[in-house]
Length: 409
Ligand code: TGC
Ligand code: FAD
Image (cartoon, rainbow, N blue to C red):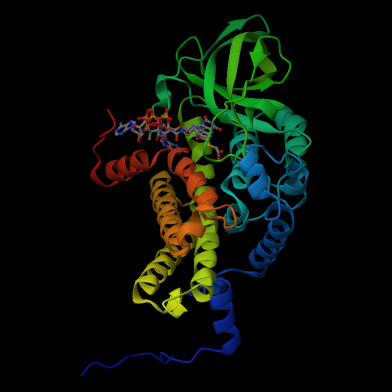
């Protein structure tokens, strides 16, 4: 007969408060215990802010296809821009787990709100911090951290999405400037942005990063209309027609595709956490609805098929929480690999989309209305599944990592 060789017995009774927390916050495996006080404080502050500032307005903005630009200042005040960038450069000076938790709480509100913060912090502040000159850091980062400047990140082109190495946007030297030509597509924040971090090939075909400022002659950023997903986030193009960019605006610290890809690693990490927030909001709504809605004389929650949906939802959310937490501990030690980040981004976003679809079913007809957040999250998550590397691209990254074979080309 086998025995459990442990001093800590497996107990069917857990302390009442812990049980309440687990169920109120859907923290089924007490992941909370793995966090420290700073993480918990950051989470509480962002959660309150989202409840007060985002939840009451987000359906209306999303329905109108309008970006709630007034939230940029608030996002800055709660430390959502560059949480893990040092304070002296306008960031939050926190660790990677705090960054992840902030993204989770923002995306509980809306993926588009998380996008506003992801782009500003991970795709604009981070490359300037990591690859910029000291002068560039001092000039741009405090203004980005405080929300005085809005930034965007231009990698994708009309003909080069999953394959950014094929980009045609280019710079050529001309005296003390570069002349920039080309176009970028699907750029979050671009129509509002004061600055754009743009990736372009130099005359030798090497990918370089340049900071382009609003108002530079030949630079425009028209909005893309007709999006049925991520509607509260503004998306546009970047068009460069002989834009003269001072040489002082080139990021000196990086040459090649690994520059933009390492920014993507940072942002994808945040999405791996963020998607859990969207899933939690859908699960929370479905659980409540199933307990209140009576059919055949009993709550939906009492039917086995509803329980199967809810039980599978919380199981997948819990697995995603543990994956994100472990990734965070690796990231804190500088050990998270790009392929590990890809696995977490892919898994957690797909998980959230599945949870949203199941939650929609539990809400029946009400699930298609804007009285519940489900359809908005579901539509948003279709974008999240695609941007920052598509679901299939991340699968191929894992495939390459485990086999050593490149199946992209
Ligand atoms: P490959 O030869 O594999 O790599 C080139 C160099 O980069 C290095 N590297 C990375 N470094 C850091 N982080 C990563 N994630 C990295 N991935 C690769 C690599 O080691 C190599 O270094 P070196 O020293 O040898 O030069 O490049 P490839 O051309 O074969 O492409 C690989 C592929 C397909 C995986 C990559 O291009 C890719 O990830 N494609 C997807 C594109 C993508 O994710 N685009 C996102 C655009 S931005 C966006 O969507 C923002 S949404 C914002 C929002 O609103 O939240
Ligand atoms: P494609 O690359 O054309 O892919 C189409 C399909 O083909 C996908 O299913 C893909 O998985 C598949 N595919 C491609 N190559 C392969 C292959 N080798 N093997 C198997 N299947 C393959 N980009 C930025 O630079 N900055 C931003 O701020 C930004 N924000 C965005 C905001 C929104 C709302 C959206 C929708 C996109 C945004 N993007 C941004 C662009 C986003 O990163 C790209 O859409 C994404 O990388 C995919 O590129 P694509 O749309 O050109 O699709």
